[in-house]
Length: 293
Image (cartoon, rainbow, N blue to C red; front, side, top):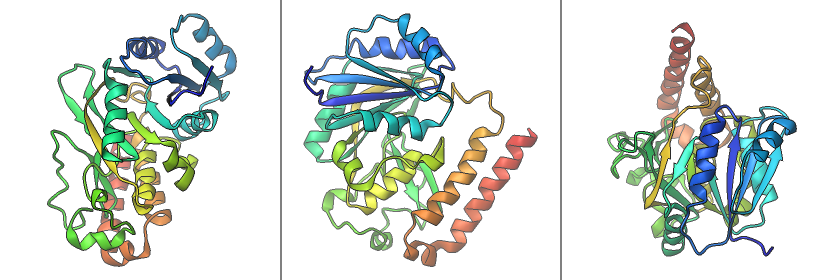
């Protein structure tokens, strides 16, 4: 088989096999002229993944990778990226279902805009509540989902699109200065070129905010993001981690510290150190509340 142009990578813990089955079924209904493959990366033992695989009849090429244990979203995504030889990498959570035009819309916007990151229009599982159109960013260390092309962060002094903050980025390309800041990795498209230049996801993150950290590195390198407004996905949000008390709050606290310490330019600290520290205290407070709840 010739090399596909798109690899759709699905990390999974098989926490809810029925949701993954629905996700894979929705991919069989895609309407696209692009040649694509699906790479399922299991954070589980090989016999468990093999058993699930045998229960399926897929109509598209699929590759199965078992990592043996839960090694996190970032490492699973990277395993798929390394396995792929495609020019485009689509990431998809295992608790999503895609519209039949999802992939063709992502590719169309990518090619028309010249963006190397493309966000989907993500709805919750009720298919009515819009949950994300990518995210925006403020330098205090906070990212918010964009909904209906708007974000609550615009009024903040450290909002990344404020004129005084453009000096914190190295790129001067006109298309660089647009929302979204980056795509929600639950359902999005990246170019191979982006990973070749800045590297893959940071595996220290395990789960949550790995897409924010990647987008920040990409922005610093001069890449930009676009929204594919007709690339629709339905998401059973937090289906895998909902029963893990305090897990998301703990990851948010640790991973924001990693972002601001390891990824921020020195000028960002000089300009917003107070806001950065206050925001980290808010993360810590949220962690305590989630554990004591």
